[in-house]
Length: 227
Image (cartoon, rainbow, N blue to C red; front, top):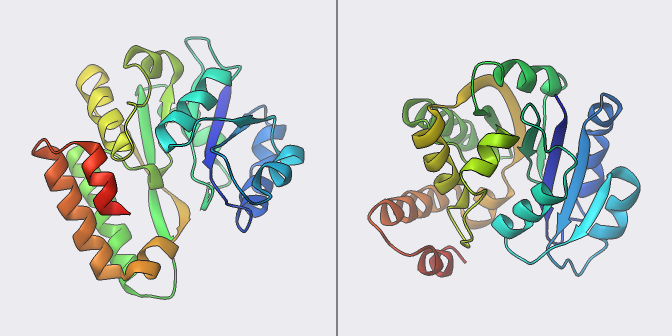
């Protein structure tokens, strides 16, 4: 399996070196690391250069950046795989073997997530995210979604929308290829988004936005509310 790890970034200089350093063992194992920069005003692109196989200047927007990274990846064969990783998320050490084994039986999958932060409520948030994902067969970007290259191409990649792109990709993959591999191995992600807005306020906001999305609200309007 040729694995390409695609990381969309926008002004992530504070966390990017640590995230990319953790991926060097996977690069040594044969994985390709592609950073898709959406127009950072800080040193993100420069910091990424020595630690990635490619650093792309991509149109701003997480979906567009991830699609650009996937298009640039060398993994184009039917047995190859893509993994989409946020800059503030760290993979477990055995990620390569875990993904390879999962994709022997599934077209796509995701990891459980552990959210780091000061608030004890973040442990509950992570537990609910993992349980909801296992029950629904829908994954979020925080869970480091991975997918066979042919399956990703078959559903057209990420939809060109400013929010809920991970939910929509999951829905399309689930309809076409079945439920994901839900790995109990955890990725560690930062709780900065929840703590900046307030944990419970962020939970309420995300549930409201997801409900509105399922009821047919346009992603552009949801993105305005999210900001």
